[in-house]
Length: 438
Image 1 (tube, rainbow, N blue to C red):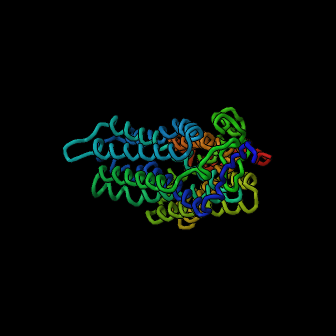
Image 2 (tube, rainbow, N blue to C red):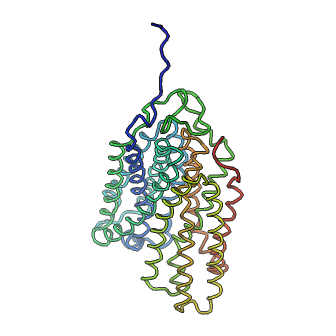
Image 3 (cartoon, helix red, strand yellow):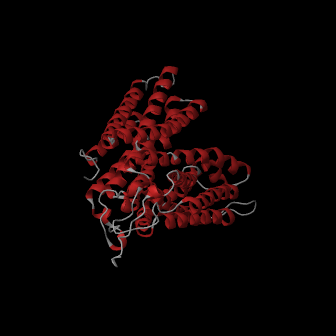
């Protein structure tokens, strides 16, 4: 027999039970939903937070905005760490630390009958939650990219992205009730329990698809490498590569721009309908629930459809153009009915167009994140997703600050037209050629 050793064979994801990839996806959904319950759910307790912590409106806005700023500043470092250490250790560290930070807020920074914590104590805790919770997106996205083949990634990433409105909806249903009944110790305690539960799922189900990194890099289902994954030290391409790739930066900036109209709807749709059309609570609730449910359905459907047709780039451009058209139509209708915005027909028209624009502006997330991660390569997906989410959360921080000034300087119709312009501004950043490497 020959003394020459046989070449090592790198296991592929297909060697593992095929069904396990859905468990990995479940971990990604749970992780993102748990953090979104805090990021999107805590603002729904604003009235109770203002009273419980004895804050004025400026202090309240600062406290709530700092969590998003913490995410924006630390998404990219978490992404770099994910590509260097792997998704499992980063996700476990991030979820566990976020749960610990929320538990600390519950015990040491919650109002009691005799003690009202200072603003800086609350703000420091919320910044820390944002900094630590920023780990979940890049790590969970990289895990999904590694476990699913290209023909399923759009659907898988879109399902993962439904965790954002899902977590926000759960937070909106649960947290105000807890704040009113039991106070903020219960609010932060419940959020800590959600993050801890997601960490337990990660311990049980999250692992490398093949368990190894070989000379060819991290392999996905069927042993196939993503585009641009070249051998490097330890089998990984330099994880800082996306930071020097202009195409990745353009794609990340496009995602950030395309999120701004969505944030405008999520943060100011109820204010617009109430102040402009004098809409009642039933209309406000119906619009926001429809936008959130529509976004979830649209994200899954768009991911599945683009997987089947291989047209993610064309879909993204079409979605940006259609969203711009819908926001322009919303602005035009709002201007036309401004003489009688409270009539039933005017209320119905503005509410319907606002709902449609909000759903369309939220439908593309999973497809865009899939294409961005594919462009960077699976081994560097954590960095690329961190770059994109830094842009996204910067938009989340700036949009609610800028929009009231736009309305004060001009009008609501102009504000919605400007939201459509943001969609058009993203078009030059979306390449016309396929994002997939040849």
